[in-house]
Length: 423
Image 1 (cartoon, helix red, strand yellow):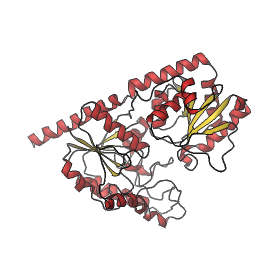
Image 2 (cartoon, rainbow, N blue to C red; image 1 turned 180 degrees about the vertical axis):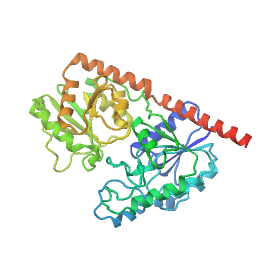
Image 3 (cartoon, rainbow, N blue to C red; image 1 turned 90 degrees about the vertical axis):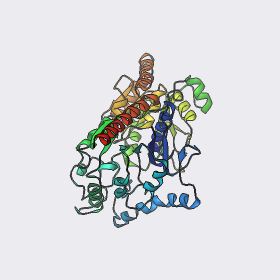
Image 4 (tube, rainbow, N blue to C red; image 1 turned 30 degrees about the vertical axis):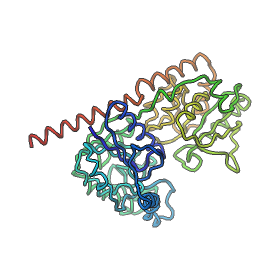
């Protein structure tokens, strides 16, 4: 069996990381997985990327070219919005590898043109990493449901016109994909539900297969040792926060987390806890969190990340809309409980007061209560940490995810073979 996983990049971004983990997981269980990308950042020889300087250069230019139509919407929200209108040669690049099945993932920034999806001659699976596949261009709808109809008058574009860019993108998808036989996979129950109600995918088969990760790398280790490695204090409770794009992307909910930290400070946590921030270096004018903050910068390897998760007492994710965040899964695998808003697919992973604390959405005070609840009882904390690790090994080990996809591949290919023989 030769699945070909298609993603815009190999290890740059959360979706790419999830795909690359799946690629390696499939190989671990004996599947001849191939991965093809538009921009290759890593050095894994099993990942197929542009070879020539020209191809690499074009790959770098495509993201900027894909957003050119947005120049007509000067007052739009500056969230990611993809039009997928650029011509590309992806379908021709695929042919020489002769895969049995095409497995799409995050294919924006000019990697795959909407109209070219129908040109693949093999069965197609599409794993959704956000909402883009069934919207008129946005990647998260910010609680707008116009994709259930035909988009248009897009709030993120600050548009009042029905026949705007979002409707144009949606209409191209509708025209090009209406007769496709495609299987949709969602990592989370939440995103699967949104796909099933969407005007583009409501007649498609939609399955749920969560992400996976290497639980031999992401695992609990002694907190004192982990803190010693990073030079973190042994006598404080450590609140971990991932800040990749968090200060600029409102969907990440930093504004609520900041209020939470000040609430904790007002309750006497300033001398008992510190904030540990990864994914960002200390800015020239850092925010006043109310607690002492330590900036760890960007960590680029699994081992460093796993040690940092293990060093922390709680990981906080204040996102107000999310699919199935890798960071939550990574933290739980390391035995570190999570406090997060009860939105999107987060409740798939965090069981309230069992391995973490699910917070009322956008309620900063409840987030402070959740952090306080996790940190204040040592016996309860030990139970939370144990349950966090056990759930991850049981449901999110990379081998579990890989076997679920293998079964889906075999089912689809078996059905295809039977159909071709009887047709």
